[in-house]
Length: 413
Image (cartoon, rainbow, N blue to C red; front, side, top):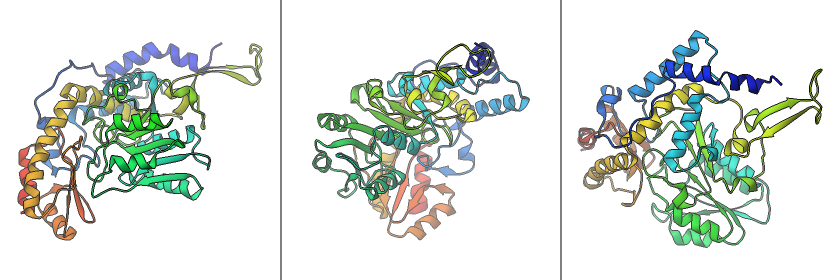
């Protein structure tokens, strides 16, 4: 039977050609690390000293070109782009899976990190009170804390570990977890100060009590190594607009393949099946009225909803292979080398460091006594850092150099 799905499958070869011609698909670069910083690959340094990449990472020149080529292609109105499963989207999902040592079938597209966490909580059946509890901590993302405090209002037993200073003590997490814990959900890297959880230790803790582990990796993916196989993580979610160098509107949800059959679908969409056979119209073959569906038993088959942002797919089709070409360990080391200067020098200027020395990603935080004066100094020198009441967060990336760090130090001196 000729269906919407079969039409898209037949268009696959044409879509592949069109995507390659338009620059949507990028050739996978050879493995290996490049010399950092890669300053010429970004226009950002021409406008400001950006040390706030943990907020919204600037586009590289290559990612911008890939996005513009997609927009040019879309403007022509040539129907070769398969809006359901394009070659570019397949390549992007494969790239992210490779980045975290997963398989593509374990990865679903989601609109955001917050959407990923909500989907996991719902799929585990944890949105209503029951004989279970959820464990998180106060260094988790603010939208996630909103999620869990709202569940508390419904009567769900939610246990939130308090930070000791600027860290979450393992002993406090252990005390919060018991035989009734169904989910531990935390940010692997805290957006506040870069505190980094030991993901394998948390996974072991969860599994020892029959629970699952969800990690928000939006401040980790693309800037520090992630291995879902060796750590045993059950779920993780990430947007793409931070260290993955994508944009708003598209992210990823990983769900371990052996966990998928234990989940319940709480939302449904055309992205969760491969084929539909109609049994309601003249000429249809007999079958269960009104239609039958060939359901996917993958992460996409449980979690994907509706269409996704093709422009961001185009961006990521360049960014994700490029990040792997730069080398995650290389990116992490470069950020830590720059942050080591700040860790040494900023306390001498009256800004005590609030980030543990074993933090894994690119974030480093400092206490601030005078928010207004600090903001005035930074703005006067065109330096972009994240300021919140009583603290400052700095997050250098692959295009930042020591001159950027010294510009910040001179401004605050």
